[in-house]
Image: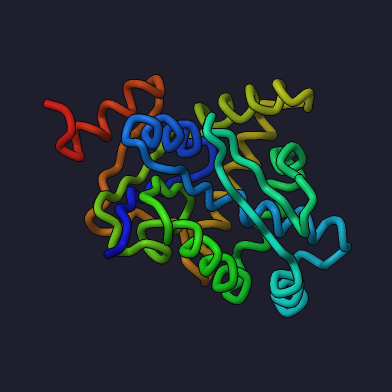
Length: 223
């Protein structure tokens, strides 16, 4: 019998990761951070000097790279590439941009989708990403699409980067997010979209607990 899946899609900065962690904690589920798989491969591509526009080379790299992602008891995500813990390196803007670029290729996505489904084979999950409801888990029990204005998403991303000690220019972040939205929604393989049956939630101006309560009510777990 397959385990339960809550699928959360949406653009960068909409709050998917934070909300997924909080929701998983409330449900007693495990978070499946799909973007971590792409960031891990992107990190390896940058390290190896693999061109980010060469699908065949990236597919070969994905075949040759051991990516292990797991979530600890405290909710922290640990990612290892060929046995090396790269968790701290994956949050950089350079890796994030590279992940968005490598994720457009069907062969790359096919290989990483296999890893994501394997991750969810042993436990109930809250899966967050761009194609959780549309491709990876089309039969998920509950499907959500989190969104927010570009300005709000840029503000959140800026806070994250400053916490990491990186520079964060609001105008540039907004432009980068808009370009990433275009890339994610127009790619050939598993484009970002609101699928039929998914509930859209605008997180602009909402706290994480408020978003989680809204999701729980939609799931019928709150009056």
